Length: 233
Length: 264
Image 1 (tube, rainbow over the protein chains, first blue to last red):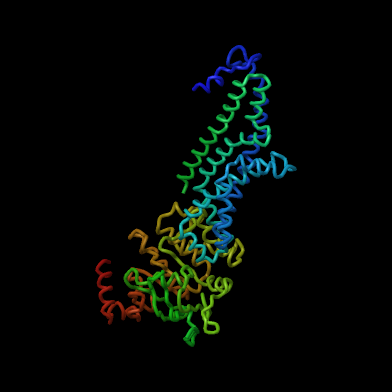
Image 2 (cartoon, one colour; image 1 turned 60 degrees about the horizontal axis):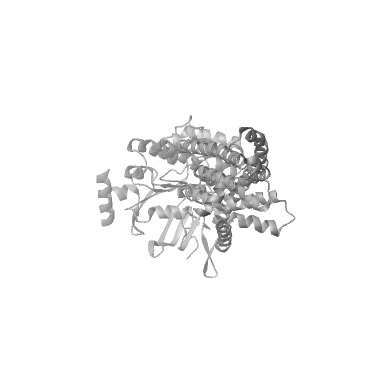
């Protein structure tokens, strides 16, 4: 407890005197934080989710259709990525590929990292398609491509959409890790404002509230979608 | 000898067929043939290998021994230099398009409408135009008594209706061979008659070869040219339905028939 005391009492001098929460200041800094949210946090989440959703499906299908040794390599690679921290992956690309734009690194790392999670969701979805469906496609001599595109994937997706949505929210909440590669995402911008003005409370609180305001409705939406999918068919 | 033996080239011929699942031998030394247009019903207690035979013809199960010929062509393996070698995927697919199957559990695609279920394979496997396939689908739906269900989804249909769609879907491929695997076993008793009547009409109006597994003995008697009684993976007795049902010679057939006819 003693070690925490300095943190709690160490209010910086200067601007930080006065009330803990200053509305005027909060309103003043809000646009800058929101801009960082839209330009970085949201962008990385959207691009990352699109990459992850597509690549995850590709990984799941590859593991299923490739001959065993190759499938094992893909599975092993996916496990490796899933089992290492996203911060480490960001740093490896950041220092390994210095010519790459940090935001691009963000897209790639978040996309690939979450693709490995989503591939597991897809795998479960694919396995949930009854054997009889595969047999019907064979009895109709459907090609492998048509079987996947018209029968297996559409049915597998139904059960996966809620889980994919939850991973998208997870990714969204992981975006502050971008600070390790100096991307000016929302939390870093808020922290910088705090450092410059010695008022952290407003900046960090606003960042937190923006996270909440974005992820809570998304979670509700996913919930609703899940119910709708459960009733349809 | 792994070549077709019947001079008239049977539509289906089993030569020394053996099927095992692990150590469990389901079929052993099975030899029989089905002529063009012939309707053959397989009867026997469950676990006797009847359904496995249909699944082997549809290539849903791997053939572990022997040979199956369709129109005189090897379906899964051929003998080459004294060895059993698999046929190419292309050859197999070519034969498979001549075979249609109706399943106990219907296996319609729930994400497609009734019409889409029926036209998918004619368009993308047989290369028919969409309008051609659609016109055929509508006439088949009429034939199975569901002219107004084309745009419904399978899950909104009753079991009997789903099975009728499944029959239409199989017929849309113009199969030479139609495999019927306990097609009424999952249905409510009151709709079994409808489905069987449709199949009787198909039998009467087409020359499609049928291989049937059913527990509906009156249907088997009506539509089949030949009935084969299976037990323990072997044919115990075979003959015309009148003979098998009224005057079975084998003790096992007598027992089986008295048991199923008592239930019916």
